[in-house]
Length: 166
Image (cartoon, rainbow, N blue to C red; front, side, top):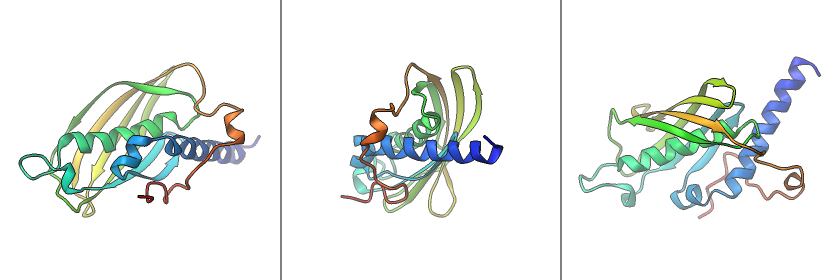
């Protein structure tokens, strides 16, 4: 297998994992989160801020930014088709979000060592303003996201269109 073949296989694997996970991601669907892009160690997700997501100050509740960031993190760290879960994370909120904002979370792999991984997620609004910075630590656990049997009959929504159903 050539280097190009390996890269292509890794991209196809990440796409299949994203499709498989998103079809089963009830939380993402409930919040209107869309998986925009996925690749090996990478994911981008977006969400429209609704008034139901605002806190008593009339600004975006930090838990909503966290959920979007955590969702992108989950897709990025599972993109190799090895089950991975969060070991820990932290987040800061340098700016507020508002109703009507389109937030985008971009998760980027920083390090994978053995079964542990570190991912940085930046959440920005439609103007490019950073509203959250998240760092997640993952741990690979036993098993694959998509088993060989499941690959045969996986319902999926194409990335970029996922989450549009309402």
